[in-house]
Amino acid sequence: MTSPSSDYELHGELPSLVDPVLIVSLKGWIDAAEAADEAMSAIEGQIDPLPVATFDTDVFIDYRARRPTMEIRDGRNTNIDWPSIDLYSGRDTNGRDVLILTGHEPDSAWNRFSAAVRDLCARLNVKMMVGLGAYPFPTPHTRPSRLSCTTPSPELLQRTAFLRTSVDVPAGMTAVLEHVLHHAGVPSITLWSQVPQYIPAMSYPGAAVALLDGIDHVSGLQFDRRALEQEAIIQRDRLDRLVARNDEHREMVAKLESAYDSTLQPTLPLEPQPAALRESDIPSPDELAAELEAFLRNANPET
View 1 (cartoon, one colour):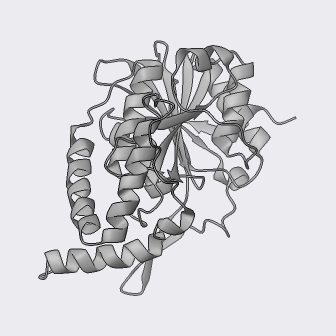
View 2 (cartoon, rainbow, N blue to C red):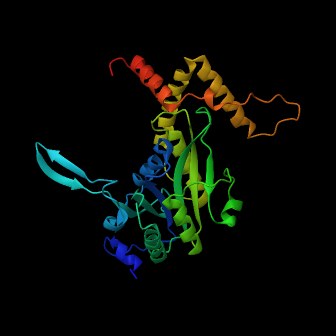
């Protein structure tokens, strides 16, 4: 049987860490507006990451699905950039040890990959795993993104006030790691940020901010959010001006706000309830994308 350690290459000796928290965000699974990737990029840019291990992509990546990039310069093939899955170490703003697992979600051998991650977590004395994700939801851009969570641990559920649901859905690698590490004695949870489903294919930094808040809540790790918060303010202003141009969009956002607010405080039995929001009331991402592009062109004619 293959040893888990044969599926990754260490970059020198393993670092000596104190109760590190492992943060996981792998490309290829549900990540609306790439909020999880944006949160992980913010973390990576702050921790001064040091490479710990690289996983064997010949085993875990299908190169026909995730082809390497050929860099051509004036006809010369100068380089092949291969997809990778990497583990880095660093420290948060308070000097606490952190590990980040980034790269592409494995295309195959999931049990083998999770065993290799479990092996590294045991060797590095990982205290906790926190996965990141984001999904589209009927929520207004005028309110903070809310978090839901998944975890095999009843204890972690009791300690958090995140949204919960009951549903059968396809699993990603982070969900597999939740179970594998949980059974190895490492508390594991994945945080999911809600992204307004009418947002087109663009970044949504407000959801990334929510994920950083969630990491702090469950693990105590802290990262600077100011740059993302500023981006979120700029984006909300753009969306506010876009929505203000269309009566139907204003009505849609108002209904979403009422639904959002009603979940935060109980209503009286005879209090009027907001009209139900139908799926047809929400413009598709493609429709809003076209309007947003036209809005930005009009707002910035030189671009």
